Image (cartoon, rainbow, N blue to C red; front, top):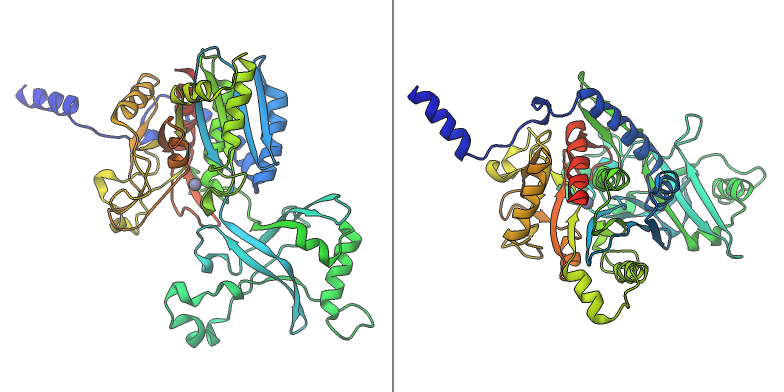
Length: 455
Ligand SMILES: [Zn+2]
């Protein structure tokens, strides 16, 4: 009897987070079905522009009466459901992902092979991008202003592109003996785009052949690359991982997993007296700068639009009041414990895959530098919302203190005097070309955002 009492006391007093598969809240079929829709989204949305287009199409199909959307430069979208009260409930994710961009004058020929010069985008481990199938997505703006969409490498009969690695037999001095960060040079990350010479041409004939194909297919010339945004992304499709199919491997899950969950939560959420917003932004992976990043005034445009729709003048005072009354989930992923590299985490404050959506009070690095540090009051409020809605959640800090760290858009949003906390699932192999997520975490993240929107 005494033992039973002790057990009860322990259960009552201790904090423990649980493996989502052990909870019987949601049926496995429902979780798996949700994951199929997510995989479809990931396969279609490999760039920020493609994500905005996809979400807009969904909005047209699933919108409710009070809903509207705002798009900024084709790279941000905000879904808005108007409420009466001051302030908004905002779930803000980012839809850019680490990738390889092509340079503005990309095409050259070396040893009769045509290649593109590239410049990587965001925090990548360069070696992961050699000798994997790659696709090219993006836009080219021609000199007459016409926009040409390019998407090659995804269909079964499309060609793919490859950044060629050096054979092991000859890589001792140049690669193997160096530190990993020095061994793979950015300027060697060139993409093979052609190999057949143009008929009757002697000099740079392979390059000419590629230019001629591009002109035939897209009507573009070499100068048009200067006004192009072409993104090189993995050509791999999202796939289930493991005999039990519990995980998903796919490109761009940081942070399109949060974007996906936020839009699903937005469309499914019951009406709230506060305005509800799902915002997807760009440029997070390179510091949130630029007119489509979290530091842009686009956020202010959204607030002004909402106030207008509420028939309130967008005076400085009203805008400040609105922001002060706003609550934000900075919807971004966390780094889950990788079983082979447990030592970079402190186990009691690490996030574990399958253990639900992660609430991260602060991000940043050593000494909480560059961090948004959510107030205890706000963390307490979110904790209650999640508990009341039976959301499986956990707390998590990115790595040991002084091990490294990372930031999100939370601190930029918090600078507008809104309440902000980071909240998203944990991924294994984050920032790799083929990141791993858990299907139960995906579903719990959706539930978390929906509960937040409905509170
Ligand atoms: Zn992210």
